[in-house]
Length: 512
Ligand SMILES: *[C@@H]1O[C@H](CO)[C@@H](O)[C@H](O)[C@H]1NC(C)=O
Ligand SMILES: *[C@@H]1O[C@H](CO)[C@@H](O)[C@H](O)[C@H]1NC(C)=O
Ligand SMILES: *[C@@H]1O[C@H](CO)[C@@H](O)[C@H](O)[C@H]1NC(C)=O
Ligand SMILES: *[C@@H]1O[C@H](CO)[C@@H](O)[C@H](O)[C@H]1NC(C)=O
Ligand SMILES: *[C@@H]1O[C@H](CO)[C@@H](O)[C@H](O)[C@H]1NC(C)=O
Ligand SMILES: *[C@@H]1O[C@H](CO)[C@@H](O)[C@H](O)[C@H]1NC(C)=O
Ligand SMILES: *[C@@H]1O[C@H](CO)[C@@H](O)[C@H](O)[C@H]1NC(C)=O
Ligand SMILES: *[C@@H]1O[C@H](CO)[C@@H](O)[C@H](O)[C@H]1NC(C)=O
Ligand SMILES: [Cu+2]
Figure 1 (cartoon, helix red, strand yellow):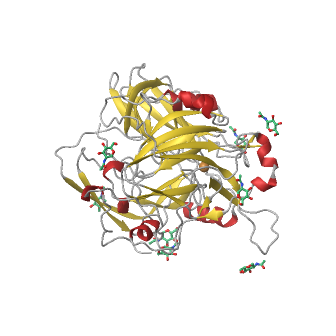
Figure 2: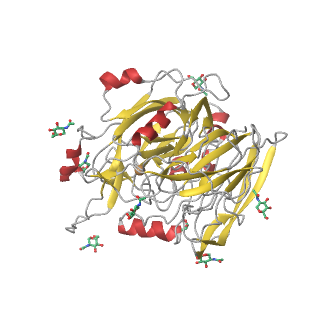
Figure 3: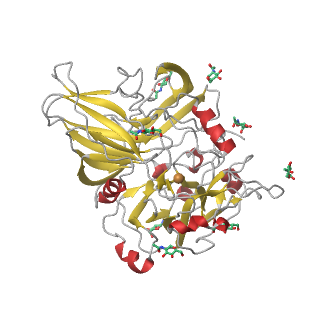
């Protein structure tokens, strides 16, 4: 399995791996433009790479240099951001708009509407976005949706063979359970990092996460549904916040299966089955000594305790607004991106006025973070807007304890760090308690990944080494929480050598 194979597209993505040949420079082009497709009884214009959904697969070998030319022929601003290639990614190639350079990224979860319009509307009103009409597997909704009987992903397998499936949650706002009827899966990698093989009948993914599983066609010749639907954890006053509660399915067909046969359907976990999600998320262990295994850094240089959660925007000073817009914050700072110059350009060229380096290393007020009574205090509900970042010396080790808050309501937030993989040392529910939870840190075989679903109403401890100079975003990967401020950034200074120094910007860097 190559570490650097990419898939570029939508909701749940599945593909079987292949191996590439000699190392070198691999060059590809992406043409991004409109494509009209028929789904759910109607025609809809979507924006895709190379007129295909999912987009093209790029096969490269470990050590290759990949050059991708992006031609944006779509009506939208866009960027390309890679997951899982951090060690060799230059800061200028990371992608997020106004952090490294310009614009917006159209998403791929299925709406009977234009996803850019959906997000623009949600951001303007501060209301939660319209719920998606369907989830898809490799672009196909599957037969539980209207007009979709034959719009279903099919995977044909040979009895006795083993397949590698890379399951990518490319949904914008949904964490997902995924199962295949009567089949167990062996998870071998997460976010492009090998793990100890982990046998399971259910895979759980947050947006931004990838899970590689081995699937052996060891059941009687027949056909079996694979299905995915949300893991929904957000509650307010104990009640689940409305979510897209539909189910996408595809079908696993054994070669030689007589058709037509009604496939077997797996029993999916309940939408709010946190114990199943937690068992999966915590059952995964790093593959000690395996390829790309990194020892846990033991000496911490920069320690952070960071509350994450939802709140409201402050009302404008001269108004007496009744209901303010939804906001989200980290340590009570709700992140706003600059509008006319990217953070990386401001950092590189020493331009003042676009950010400050005083992101707090702990919350301004200590409180009973996960107690339901916190949201009864109106003073706690408002998080101010700012563009505060953390400056890091090259090669420093950072520990972050994420603490979800019950302000507005608890929720599992998938926190994604750009530029680095991190070790996940421990996770749990309730308030993080150093006296008891410190002992739970796993320094032996913790999983390594780049996106962690911080337990709903709980906490997680991660560590990473800041050995990649540049400006790197840390944010919730739920698409609705990023524009409302659940983000911050790290500014990593140059190291002592040319290899550890951020190169000058490429001449074709998109300008703002
Ligand atoms: C995308 O399409 C272009 C033009 O047809 C082609 O040259 C290119 O190889 C395609 N890229 C990929 C990654 O398949
Ligand atoms: C692409 O689709 C958008 C949204 O439907 C539309 O506004 C735009 O005119 C289309 N552009 C092209 C070049 O077809
Ligand atoms: C999904 O949500 C809709 C609307 O909130 C509700 O009417 C329906 O019963 C829900 N379906 C399931 C399977 O929970
Ligand atoms: C509040 O002040 C801003 C800037 O001073 C102004 O643009 C806006 O119209 C004012 N709003 C109200 C409701 O007075
Ligand atoms: C939550 O806070 C209330 C009010 O401070 C307190 O009475 C209660 O014991 C707390 N609940 C828990 C589970 O700690
Ligand atoms: C966040 O900051 C605002 C403004 O300083 C303050 O009113 C509020 O109490 C703070 N909330 C928390 C949870 O720290
Ligand atoms: C970074 O830190 C590691 C571990 O402490 C050390 O081995 C390495 O030499 C350092 N790299 C640089 C470029 O300072
Ligand atoms: C696209 O980017 C340009 C240049 O940075 C900016 O002026 C424009 O407002 C952006 N358009 C949208 C729709 O965001
Ligand atoms: Cu979130």
